[in-house]
Amino acid sequence: MKITQSDDLHQELESLLIGRWLTDLSNFAALFFDRTENVNWIGFYIFDGEKLQLGPFHGRPACTEIAIGRGVCGTAFQKKEILNVPDTHQFPGHIACDERSLSELVLPMIKQGKVIGVLDIDSPVKDRFSEKDVLFFKKALEILLKKNSHVESSVLEKMFSI
Image (cartoon, rainbow, N blue to C red; front, side, top):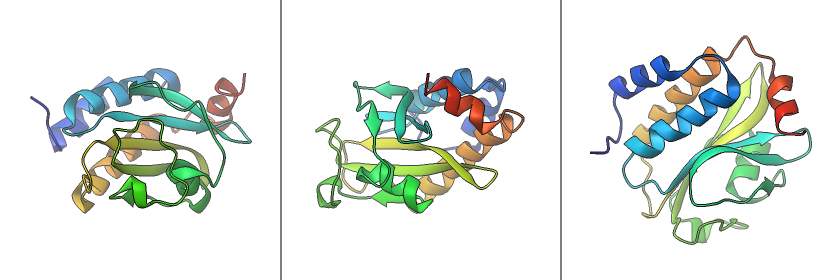
C-alpha cells in the first residue's frame, strides 16, 4: 500500500541515506516513487554548470537535459523557488517528457546558497500536490541535503558533467 506522507517515511529516508550523493539520490527517488500515491515520475535534475542533467529517477524514461529557465524544472531552478503546477497543460513552455503527467511539483536543491539541481515529481492527476505535500517533500529534501552536507556541490556537478 502506498503512503502519501508521514514522519515515519522521513525516518525511513534517514535510515537509507549514507552520505554518498549518487546512492542517496537513487534511494530517495526509489523510496518516494514506491511509497507515494498518484505519482508517475520522481527524480532529480542536476546542474552541470550550464544546464540541468537527468539524475537518478523512477518512472518512464525522461528528458536528459533541460535548459535553465525552460519548463517547470528549468524555471524553478532559475527562480530558486518551489513550483507547484496543478495543470501542466496550463504552464507556458511545459516540457512533456511523459504525456500522462498532468500536475508537477518541483523543488530546487539549494546548498550553501547555490542551486545545485531540482527534485521533480510528476502525477497523472490534476491538482495532485497540496501545501502539505510541498512541506513534506521540502522536509525530505532537507534531510537529503543535510546528510550530504559534507560533500562539496562541485563533486555532484562533476559527476554529471563527465
